[in-house]
Image (cartoon, rainbow, N blue to C red; front, side, top):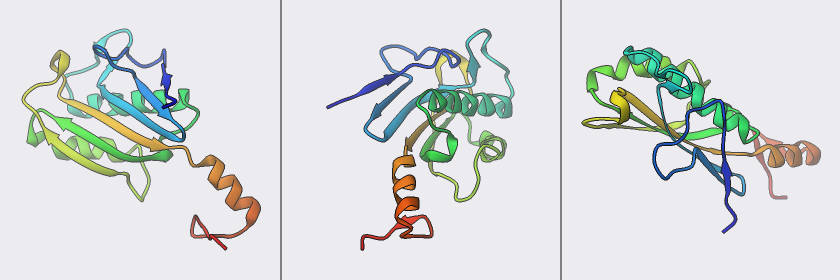
Length: 147
């Protein structure tokens, strides 16, 4: 299998034996990101700020792969306390437009470095398909026909 390791210097290094992201064809799997930056570690004790930093890290990794958050199809959010959900969800949704990516929420006992939230993402680079559809002018609501 042809895999490309995506390494983004503006996002924190992965923890342990992991890649920040792996690209296989048009699929991009972004490892779970914490609310930390490259300089200060965990940026704040605030769940909203940690969630925003997780998303900024994911965005940076995707930009390194040549795409943006609009290509995210699915995320998983790990929270250490169910009471954080509403605040984390509010911060999370500010990074997306409808239709929002599919998402799973998992509650865990602890996260690395005492973080309160961790988010992973799956994206697909559909730019080639978008160009093909535009050239063929056979698109209907963002879906190419097979005529």
